[in-house]
Length: 265
Image (cartoon, rainbow, N blue to C red; front, side, top):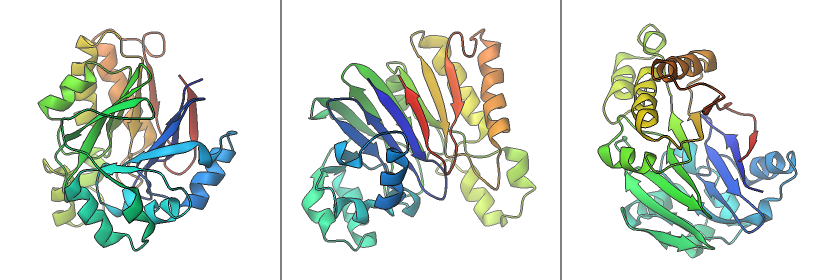
């Protein structure tokens, strides 16, 4: 049985799991080994089943647990060479070196029967990747941190069964919130994050063309500048405009920030 877990999603840490009876993987390790182990165990899964890790970028909320995980699980960590160099500067654990596996953007790789393609997205990290993952026939696209959705990402989304897509901030909450103007400009910029409206427009385009899409998971929802209700309703309204019904035609979920969420797909 195929399962998707959101182990943590947001500025406090990001970590996602895909797995079945054959193998399992993590996308990002923004929380520590103990947290991942405990949250997986709470839904009856063993962290030792994880056999690979894919990293999207080198911001701390996506890699801060990487050293603690690789020191206990000797599994390959996939990222571009540019990202690996950046990660090695931020992670002190020597265990990362032995797990390093270099991938190239826009090239397909395979490990344990899982096929995946990393591709570049705009964000203010050293380098930021989205992932197209073909997990034994079920296709995922991960777009966790990005200021805008590039054409290539749309192409992969047209092939997806499930999309994990950022819906980071509500524009009004951000503009009228306590953040300094410099930080607000960074978040809104083309190398920042997707707003609820950006996310909703993206979903509208994808769902008007991809008629086999089964589910959308809204991720990286800001604690300070958004609410789950606002993120969910904004995307729901866009789906309604193109006569896509939730949940009859497609599932739509706003992922929690610090609690595990389990889905059988």
